[in-house]
Length: 172
Ligand SMILES: [Zn+2]
Ligand SMILES: [Zn+2]
Image (cartoon, rainbow, N blue to C red; front, top):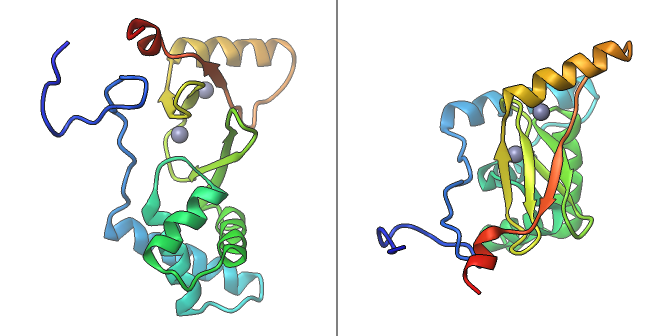
């Protein structure tokens, strides 16, 4: 396999990195800003510019991130913002349905992603810790059928597959 272009990035296992994290555009950021504002006001909390700036830094990071990763990302852009503030902002963003807890990674860390996304499930690579997304209509339908058969009404679900990467095996 030839390295196709210089812009192709590779994961530690040798797999080309095709899932780039989604960067929200200005329009989405404004929607979230309004959402955060109304959430804070409804909770009797103060909306401040500082609060939004921290939220914006978290949201611009995008992708799948654990709290520690977010702390580091935010620190890179704004060294004055401490870990406790980032943790607090993550909680507020989750409560405001802007961010959500999406899975627990192989090391037991909680991973967050943007709330506003089409349903998808995840594969966690045990070799390079990368998180991949998939959607399979067959699985979804079969699962709904099982849930119905058992007399439940599904609210939400989460599939996380922890797997070794075949790219790693191939490179040995
Ligand atoms: Zn699913
Ligand atoms: Zn995801």
